[in-house]
Image 1 (cartoon, rainbow over the protein chains, first blue to last red):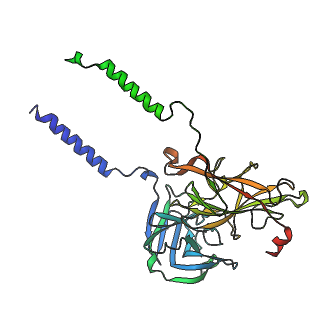
Image 2 (cartoon, each protein chain N blue to C red):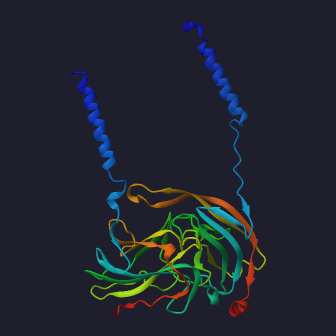
Length: 182
Length: 202
């Protein structure tokens, strides 16, 4: 018995360490964003934000409300969004599209819904645009939208988008950011 | 048995081999620093996870598409460096970096000018300049210079930054940091003066 006990104890401790290692979340998980999964056409809520992605489009050229045109490869995301509790600090401040290893941030080169102010109770609508390299329109993209510019500890809405399925239009004119009419 | 192994001799021999090997690689002589690569205008340079291609250096009477605005009354001019940039990192990055020297695009330095340049999109796009992964973009770096600092045909030497990427820990956990900024390459070219009348036309 005296000989077996240390071995048993060793096995128990090793097994315990293995379980602890297996269930422990990766480093930095304590500050990870709270993700709300969403689909196109359905509303989703993340902390002080409710939004609906109404459409995802792609084009070789986009034009802003002022008529400025930019040639590149663009993914255009149409969004209806409103704040929930407070309009203070409420802007669509986070918009990222991850395709494979690469992450893209919504463009600021043209006037869009990105970083537009949101108001509780009155939905606004507009579009954010992502500039991609010409070879990136394939596979599945992960779209994340939210209020914070720094997404740690904060809520984001997450959508999966099949980029290979989107027809590529020649040109899209971004809708002017406006109060949602519905 | 142990006394049969000539330990002191072995140590001496080992030391001699070590010294000989060190001497063979130059001993205690100071090593000349690696020459900084020279690239020419239109030639691509990679450093700081960026691909930078200097396209030209212009001296403008007006700002044009640059972010600098010269004071007309003081006859100031704008020195503009046109550069094509591709971010080869897999996340978006600001073209302007923190610290001096900067590891980002504003780390491009013109000899004789201490300030960091202002950065604008060459096509006149507004907003802060974010470099999206693998998306090429043409930028205009600019400085305001005095009326007699530079002239058409003057030779200028630019330095392009290189740096080491690391990911932060603790309070900076997950933050991408480019530091240990060094001069990665130099470009020597001549300044081309753009008269004010031409700028109006274009």
